[in-house]
Length: 618
Image 1 (cartoon, helix red, strand yellow):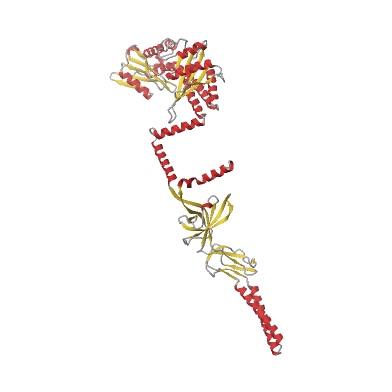
Image 2 (cartoon, rainbow, N blue to C red):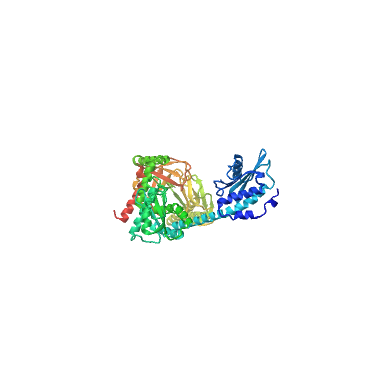
């Protein structure tokens, strides 16, 4: 059998395509497909299964022969084809089965199954069914596209209204904007929304096209009664006429809706309740109702009614959330307290309960337990003695043997000054002394007593000047007065340079005598006293703790880092060979025992007292 010869585009297919009733289209299509496959001579049974695209459920829409149930073998093949989205070809003894999926673009909308009387599927049968399913795709694809377009339009409308809700600043403005826009989009005469919390009475929040509805008290009461009626029953209520006494198949009470329709002449009223779960720890659920009213003489679009049924679940959540954010402070604090109590005494939240218990124990420990109260401050290490070495006379630097940072011993030469002028001066005075001695000898030979005394006095004067010059020459070598560290001074960069008498050349501090200088804040200085013990940790030696004792508290404050601090001096109580002047760290002075809660909060309490005094004078 050649498909090209057996299925031309003939009148039967056109006649099938022109059928308006979908219930007739499926069986007519299947009959035509069986005829193209050889009819009853080659086909035992056939089935057409259709359903919503991709999701299902898929159901048999046509059987051939009509009225004959589908066999299990054919049903199994169809199910496999739906699952795989591929054609299934099976051989059942002397018979065979073919199941061909029906696709619209990439969407699966059904399957065609045929059971043949032959041991194998006839050649061209799969192509025939694939070609014939194109008529199904065209017919069902149009319906599917219409549904998609309608769904897309509804989704866009819902999205626009949701964005309008989120775009408004206040909840009341959002309610008015949403109800008015929904009335325009859905063709409603009125759209109203009301809210309630827990068992409270539902109150009208907004009415479309109305900024102030306080003067329309009768309408407001009627709307609130209808909304309450829908909220109490928890289901949407649709009122299409004015009758309120006729029995309804769904069993819902519509008395207030009928009164609203009768008094205000509406053709259709739809009230859709919505609810949000109670917030964590709260037993008062927030809920509300949207009421849509269409005029009696207007043609109501079914799609508008479908959209109206779906909108409250989306918009209600956004509006209630916005209203929650605008609650007064006392209500938010009350809700927070109830949530906290529910977590503490209610079920679940085990980790929160354990954390709360630990926090309570920590607070109690802080209130009743005591600890070591210590005052801390930045600390610097200084030498207890700092000896200045100055230039003994005006001169020039001849050599420099040491500089700042070096450790020297007592008597080590630090630098040498040029003493050539002193040597010449000493020689000059020595020559004059010899000359005066000669004059004294000549005067003795002449027995001139006065001249003898004058010459001897001048000789003694010259000797004193010579000894002075020799003493200054001995001081030309600048030596360390004791063992220590050169804190400052470097003449290696001033060789040949001039120095003046009394000019500072070096500063030396001993390595076995230090003092600790702490910078203590003025808010803590009142707690310190001489003799208190403390501990120092230096930045250069963080693994060592140096004990000390306070020896001096200065009474004058100075500014450092934008804060007033006092200078507190202390003496180390342990000798550590690695200490060097200028090292910095943090020192802590032990003041005594105090309650932990006072230690932790004293700075805040003192600051609060100062601010109260500054602002209120109390």
